[in-house]
Length: 104
Image (tube, rainbow, N blue to C red; front, side):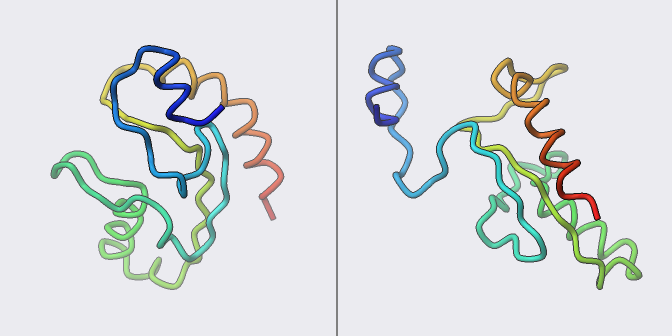
């Protein structure tokens, strides 16, 4: 079933996501090259993960040569709130396992 079919089936009127995006809930590992990740910044108090790492490297020059690794989960929207969304919370065990597998 395509993402468009899923949206229509669930009565969601949002436009379909581009087909080149990872499937919702897919986890990924990015090391050093974060060009495939979202870098948009909706405001001064909401940084993307990539922007937060860049700010950290500006604030602490000794971290400029550190190679960071990000473990991600594909989502279709994000909002500020006190809790994780149910779909993301359900992914936590898988994310934790992925983090542990990627430790040196």
